[in-house]
Length: 80
Image (tube, rainbow, N blue to C red):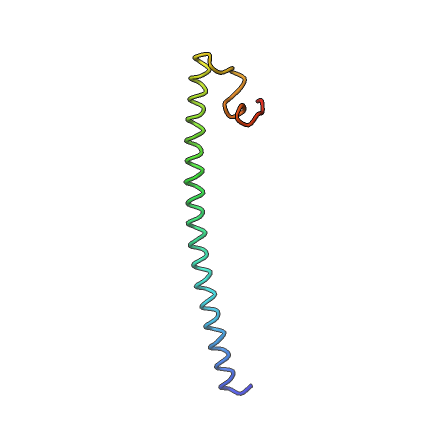
């Protein structure tokens, strides 16, 4: 390999490395966005669980639901 070819190869490798770094940064940004979405969905699920627990308590207090069966258990067909 002569010096010109070696320099061209080095420049090509540097360009490819920069491109890979840019792709990696884009993937990291997507990962952060997905992590934020997962956290938001987890918070939303927690709110739904709280609502279900409140509704179950009200139904149990009114005698409309047996205390040993939750709505989730009835929906899933399982027992606590």
